[in-house]
Image 1 (cartoon, rainbow, N blue to C red):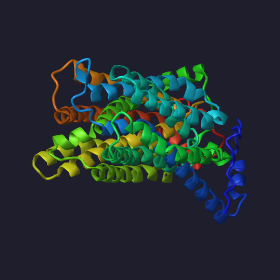
Image 2: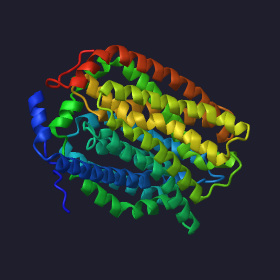
Image 3: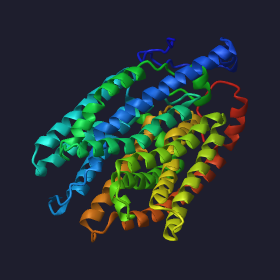
Image 4: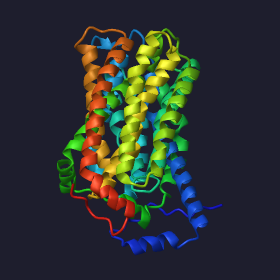
Length: 462
């Protein structure tokens, strides 16, 4: 059966709606037919977004499974420097994306994804052919090219009644792909391919699937009028729009950015040094362990976060996401004591910490920023606010990684990760509580109006 999905060339209309027109839209088709079409479109969107970002991971993450044992760069571990330089490029890309993603017209998204992926693939050729002293330069440009792809994909999914469900599918990709790409990379290494050429071959394996999934993305329909009524119209942002939004909602944005900073540091440390953490826990990592542990983590976090679309009221959904994030922070704080008294195995503690980290990380992407914009109804898009948080988050990770490698006495990754996760989890708990209290005080009155959903959408001066 052929789906009637609109091409990306459709430009979103700038319009407002009355309550009567909303009911006309909702009733223009038989309920069963409209519902069936919505679920078909949702499934198409999830597969397209999941597949695109899954393939992107194959262009970025294979290097993390390599150990580069006994290799150094200017006296430091080559593996640590390689990861840090790639993340540095990724972080710079996030800062660039604050402007470019916020202003990106929908018609250019698919082309931009393919161009950036092609550049990233070529950097692995340079990485494999260059001397060690120059190979890290190509890693910087690899991260620089790939850092904006998430925002481009997210632009197809935001501002919809089902956004949490769609974005949860997108987030599942980087959770599941993290372990799967490591497994593919380990498999390629086991076939005798060298560590410097392995990333290019892994990327090559995923090139054709990437083309297919991006083509699917380009066929996703724009948000309909009822989506705009319930979630607000999402538009490209001018510099004035961006500065006004950050100034008007500074407290909530500050708490969410700090939360994202801490969780990004922990989540990326766990991802990039998962083999070292396995060894620190006394296990020899195998490809099957990478994939299995991340599947358990991914499906648990994504399933919980995806349920947010069932909550119509924006404030209620925002506070529910705060609660889910608090649950995740508590899991991290509890996991390590349970492991120390041998109630958790190495597999168990890494999975429990992973779920604890990904619950707040995923809800930031699926719900917190999405519902914040829906409550404020300002001229905004999720790509902008997420890239503000991502830029700060990856900057913090680079500082932590380089500081550990160059400014302190080097130690195993496990004690460093253990201590860092406890400190950051406590900070995240405080940020979540403050954010929830402020949001309740500022938008509780608007919440009652939303339940009635009468009148056209307008900006909430809170």
